[in-house]
Image 1 (cartoon, helix red, strand yellow):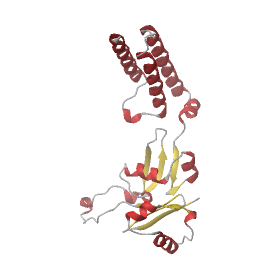
Image 2 (cartoon, rainbow, N blue to C red):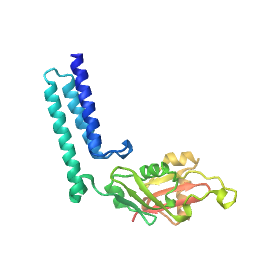
Image 3 (cartoon, rainbow, N blue to C red):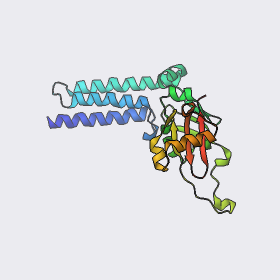
Image 4 (tube, rainbow, N blue to C red):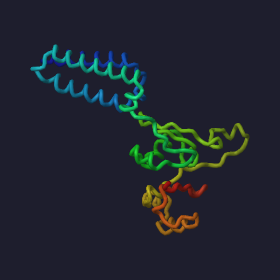
Length: 224
């Protein structure tokens, strides 16, 4: 029994390696939602086959062969027919256009402001105001074009002394006050509402998101 389990595992591993080579994956960071579906199906095949004595090695190899062939054909069809690829994988979404958040694209992509800010921080961008264009790729990664003034020029190149920076704090998220953000800067709701009035905003609900830093103040995006 143990020998049969080991044999099935080895066959499954070899099949997976062959498929990865055939469809040309170069690194795990490029994994797509469709790759995740492939992995789930393989997991189901392994789970049902390895510990079931009624499933012979022949049955197991046949199931893996069909799985591998289906993946290979699916990938080739997507490479050849653009409409089919778009239907299955979708298109990149332009979530920031010329510095403005596209709320409809956000909602369609099931993306929230704080999730976007997390993706930006992973690229070393700590404020939305630095971003001119941003695409949410089909893989879930974010591609960003920053404004020229925010391109990385080092103080050493300019021969100047650099001021210290600080990350922005999200204070309004989809028309709602972020209490956590206020606690981080030791402020309250009254301060926030009064500060936003000074910026020309009489209602929190008209603001899609607002971030704040001690040095730069507010950066606000309204619903559009």
